[in-house]
Length: 483
Image (cartoon, rainbow, N blue to C red; front, side, top):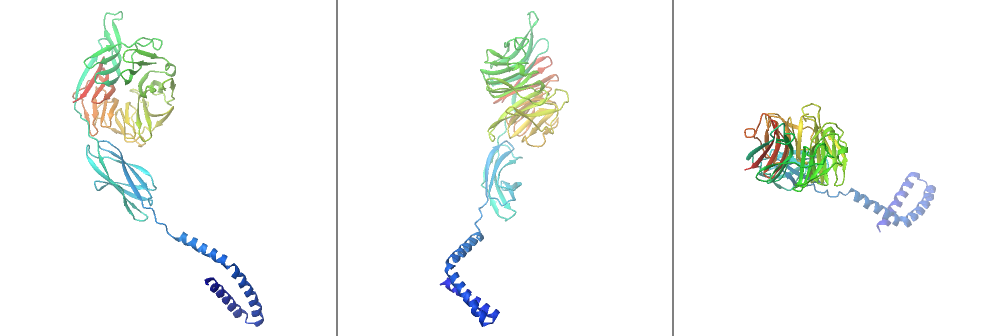
């Protein structure tokens, strides 16, 4: 019925227009004939036209309708804490970008950040207090639509500090010539190995005997001569420069140009690394006995995969003085970093990330040329000891920060190692020892010090720390036990 009325209306409008335009009976009669014929043609095809028009109108109506917008969502998850810091992951979805987000700590704004897209962002919060509980949540206000959205609230408890209270003991070895210990490994409180070169006067043909290790059995230190085949070295009992212990029966020893696999009693020499080296091995680090790195002079880096040694090109000829690695839960891989510098000569310093069999030189901006030791917890805190203690929160930070001499240390640091980010030791010239408990640094120079001593190698395990070096012409071991 609607269609017929619509067609009649069209026909009447056309007839009226023709009459008005021509006002002549001949023309009017002539055109009425054709109009009637056209009208009948349209009348037969109108159902299809109506259907097309209805479809177009329906489609246009759908396009013009406004779908409901998805509500913005924020979610907080705690990733990690230290004594004074927290790492919180913020997940944002359906944001009307750009968006300004406020991080609230116990109801007050602690940080303000801007987000330009949906993403996961790790928020770093510092200046917290140890062993304290805080509540965090985020509120976002979109600059486009002024819509306030808040996240869930999470509870964060910071780590407690460790104690600075240690009881210290020291032992000296060597009765003739010059003696020194280069490195130390704690297996447990009753099983500690230190390696180096100790000369003891006696009635032998040379007038002295050289020992290359000392061992602590829980009650006393015993001088040791660990045999190493002379086919690898000029002597059968070389001075070992580094030690790394995976267990009491799986210990790696590094001499000037070879490796020893030591089970606590006998040593199996490995000369296969020798062709890859052009200088002494200074330090060892590994995640397992099938994933071991040796670093040394002339930029040497070699990797043991459980079957063979492979040389890794470092891109430098500077002596590599230390190496450390730590597993990163986010990347599900180990982060491995070595440091290179000349001792007492300013030839610059280098920071080298080892990724597989490739080396990437990281930024050393802010890093002094005189550096000796590295330790870090991947993605949380990085320390380098040298002319002051250098540190970063993230390796991607642009500049290394440094405590000026006299603030934490008074002298150059040669080694640094930690049990956790709230239990870190550094030591160096004048046998200066400093401890970080997660909140503050404590210097033990009034308890342990020497005008002629240097401590280099450090090992820390649970509540015991051991450090080795020399004091004048004698090798020295210093052991601290937490009270």
